[in-house]
Image 1 (cartoon, rainbow, N blue to C red):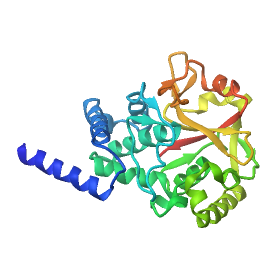
Image 2 (cartoon, rainbow, N blue to C red):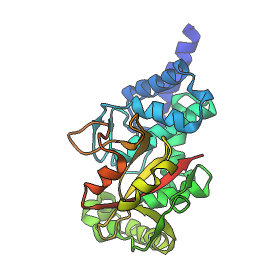
Image 3 (tube, rainbow, N blue to C red):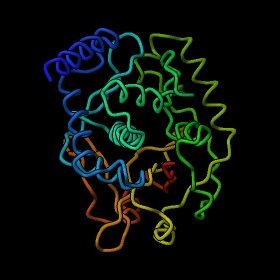
Length: 282
C-alpha cells in the first residue's frame, strides 16, 4: 500500500511538471472523487448516457466561473474542476464519463481525454486548435465517432448563418489581440464552419421532439446573436414529470443546476436563444 501511495505521489508530481500551471492538487482530488463515485455505483457497466447523468449530478452546486481556460501565455490543457462554465461543465462530465466507460480512471487518463475533446482532431497545437465554436466541436466529435449529431434526424431544420464572432470581436479575446496570425487562422476556421450544413430544432419545436431526446444527450443552445452559432451548452435530463430538463452551469453568481422549467420552456424564455442542437454520446 505504501508503495502504491508513493507511485501515485510521484505520478502527480510528474504531471504537475509536465502540465505546468494547468491544474491544482484540488483538481486531482475532485477527479479521483468522481472515479470513486463511479466505482461505488458500478457506473462502468451502465450505458454512457446514464454515466453522464450520474457524473453530471455530482457537480450540482459547483460554482460558475468564467474564462476558466484563459490561463498562461501559451495554450495548455487547463483544468478547473472546482469552478465551471457551461462548456467546461459539459466537457468535464463527458470526459470523466468516457474515462469511466473505457476503464481508464486516473488523472492522466482524464487529462488525455480533455485534450481529445477540446481540440481539433484531439490534438493541442496553439490557440486556434481549440474548438472555440460549439458547432465546430459537434462537427469534430461527430467526424471522429465520439458523439452523433442527431439534430437533423429528430426533426431539425437547416440553419444558414455566417460565423465570424471571434474575428469581429477581437478585443474580447486576449490571444487574438496579441497574435495577428491567430486571427487569420480563426478566419479560415470560421469560413469552413459557415460552409457546412448544420441543423437545429427551433425553440417552438423543442417540445414536439422531447420524446426523441434522451437523458445524457449533449445540448447546444443556438443564438440569434450575429456571427455566433451556439451561446450556451448543457446536458438533457428527463425528470419525474416526464419532461426533458436542462442540467447546466448557468451564469456568474450561480451554480451548476437542473432547471425547474423543462428545456423547451427554458429556451423560449430567453430572447437571444432560438433553438437547440442535440448530440448523442457514442
